[in-house]
Length: 92
Length: 427
Image (cartoon, rainbow over all chains, first blue to last red; front, side, top):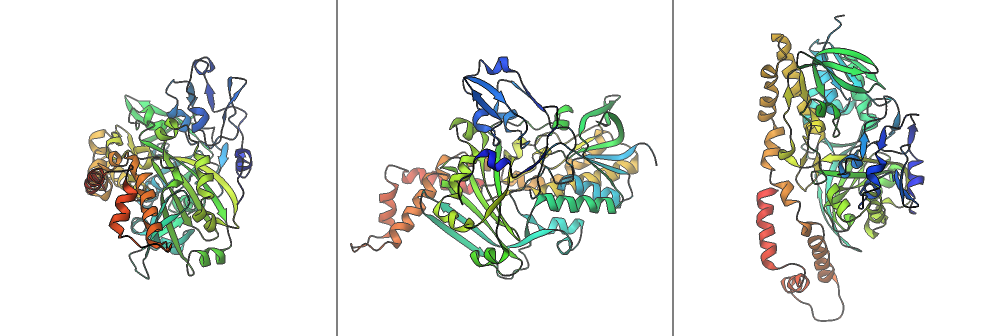
């Protein structure tokens, strides 16, 4: 089986994306972070560095909560998407 | 209908459904609130559903529930970078082996329907946003902008239990007591699965991998055969991922392309990619389990057994859900939902395998911190096998001598003995 990118993987899943993001970053905290565990810990790669700045896309979130636990700077305001929204696993 | 539910269950996973099913059967008014579009749509499993507990709740469920395959083979596979060494247990036709592979999106949906058939209400697509408080006790939930009153709330909202956290009973999740699982569902024709894994008909296999699947770090890999697919994943301690700047998905990709695993998934098509956390800190992680008007069950209470053999959580979820239901039934009988009455829950768990198993294996979490378990030992075992089985035209050596040669510079005999002793105490 050939390797897949994260985008290809996420494209397999069914999502009903909420217009409201369910995760918010305190970017002023992120700017001072030198470790950025979020870049590694998110299995959907929702966190990305663009020109040295952290950006975040919630659409592909798998709702695992890893970022909430790995970020020890308190930069992540985390909740679940509103009822009915977010990822829907067909197999699980 | 009374406008106060006897019980509000948050989360329609195995813990929540078990509690709700029991209560509905007893004639209590139960509401299950599930944030997913349907029950199970947010859930992922990397484990086996064992029959006895489920049977206690719904006798001969296996004929009715959408289970995948009866797990009759348990395999432990140690991986080095290129090779592997497996121990394959085949249960034959033993009646004792009544574990099933399941796909949670299907199984949980069926389970939630059983709750409804028993008379419970399951409200899907509804997120419990907060707890409702009255005179210092939990008196319901806030969901979808409404206050919903309940005599007791059962928090079955999974590993990231925001509700239990709000009540001050939350599990203290930290990178060292939580594992991240990433998983793929790989479609294959049933005949291919049966032929490839040596299965007949409904039987299935569970493979637990140790070693190169996590590139030698704290965790393991798994493969379960479903009817028409494989569940393949890796589970790694969050702390280790962060410390080594490793991505779960890269580990999964590496695992999938290992020569041994590559053969097992060959020709398959990935149809889903998922991730989930597993509380793996054992007994020391279990929070207070009840307060006035609230009980915490399943993953929300970190009731998962991590022994290093495999992760076991669904049974613990079911059993805790049933214990919670029994507690609520008694509380309803007395019309008293204070923590004094609800403390029965902890007693019931202490009498059952739930807290007893967690106690028996309370040293496991610490033992599993030993990095040699994931790197040196699987590597050593594979090297030993390689040299024992190779024929290279040179005089052979005895196994013990090969072992000593291979251990050199990697692990001392004393370290090995110490590890064996701590394994004795922990596993």
